[in-house]
Length: 118
Image 1 (cartoon, helix red, strand yellow):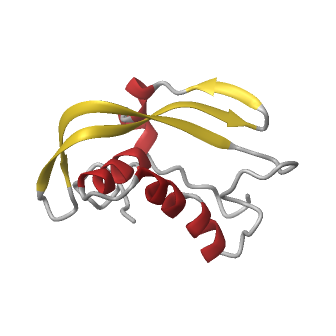
Image 2 (cartoon, one colour):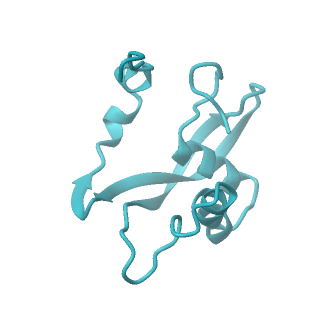
């Protein structure tokens, strides 16, 4: 896990998932590691899986052919031949198209602090 405020590497989930593709991990294993496994690790057995009757908030990704260099937290660059890219989201049953060009805009990475009264 990386924090985009202190790491030099691109630290969003699709880039992290793409790094695992570079390392040879199967796509099915990557999806499990970013959905079911974390939910179970924090005691959310009803999250991280698609189950009939369960409320589903989900992101649909696609795998695209690419030639892009991804740098890790140690500054090591590796060439990605495939990238995992968000396509659309279902949140509370509503469809939302991902605006990939806006994902890395500076405003997305600014920490927003709540006051102690919130």
